[in-house]
Image 1 (tube, rainbow, N blue to C red):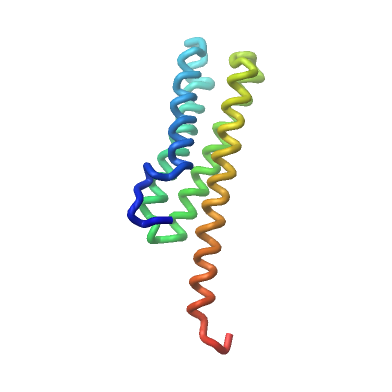
Image 2 (cartoon, rainbow, N blue to C red):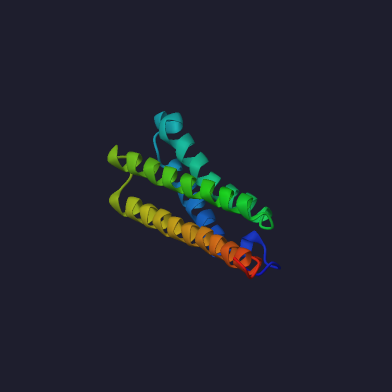
Length: 135
């Protein structure tokens, strides 16, 4: 990770932002009666993915915090995927849109997990190089 970049340069951030926008558009097509039953929950969880990536990135010099917020983003992504599945199962979303949102959630999840793994491996390499020769 290049420390001169911003969170806006991260591919996973861009994908999460795109997903949040897609969710926003999808919820506009839901009936008004679903405003609090589905809409509010899926909007919050999709926005939480973005917000937690940004907050984690802001703590990038504190690796445990960085990983913690990326883990929150991963959980919010899973939650978003579950809400989309419920909306689809209720017959309120067509198959193509559901498959598209599901694919995006899976892609973001994989990228977040890979990001977390890379941070952990980087920490492991640093800690091993700091160990005394006797260990």
